[in-house]
Length: 308
Ligand code: TXA
Ligand code: MG
Image (tube, rainbow, N blue to C red):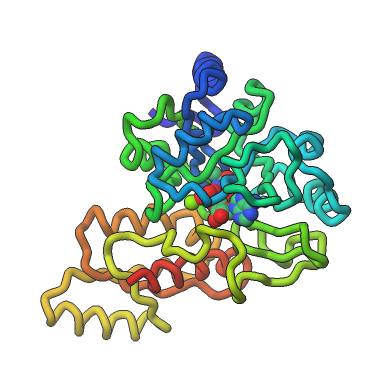
């Protein structure tokens, strides 16, 4: 059964809050991807996230908040552009890096002086955050290095019994992770393209995604299926390459969903997972146009293609 958006009975939320207060792990939907949540104020609870994901301890995790007012408790200072971005785009698929306050445990930031904050828009995430009251540390709810989950079934397939509870809010509507903007620089710097496009942002930013990465975890092939991913420049080129590989006996398919980048983003991770379910050797992908949310899709496709 798939509950309506924001669905999940009230007792699920009660159980989730009880588990979180006891240091447990609760996977929950956001509009971008599913998160693996723990009480951000509890070093032991956050520690469990790293153990379950198999993620290096120095990779910082995002703290999810119910509203922008909560930002001041987790940030040492909030520069005006961060305040403007939060006011315009939260709740939404945007993560802001700001100087951390003393309340943020080292486990959350990997010892860094900054913390990533985000107010998600998914109604079930909002209900959970309202009921919990605190901040939820949550990376994407997949094993380290694998494709992010966009359904509760993906979470169960990846993490199974290692999670205390999976809240099912249906398929994620955005489908790629949040845009990350480092607000400790002037002007602020985009570190990861995501659910909100740079053009939509109400503040002028510089693109930091092409230079040396400042965020540990951003350089790895985070978005890679087991199949090799190859990018094709056109449908015709993809068909030629597929035919050539099939002659060599490889299991190949072409992914060419067309120019609708919003739909592309929404289904991308599901399609990458399907490539593995079908035991493909190679997935040949025709990318979406490189504008709008297509920029975020292409960033992930390039990483998937560079993974081997
Ligand atoms: O849409 C999203 O952002 C999802 C949902 C669950 O909110 N979360 C997500 O988390 O994608 P994760 O951990 O898979 O990716 C977060 C990225 C990592 O690459 C991490 O290095 C970076 O954000 N990050 C988080 N806090 C940071 C900090 N203080 N400094 C630098 N990078 C940071
Ligand atoms: Mg992730």
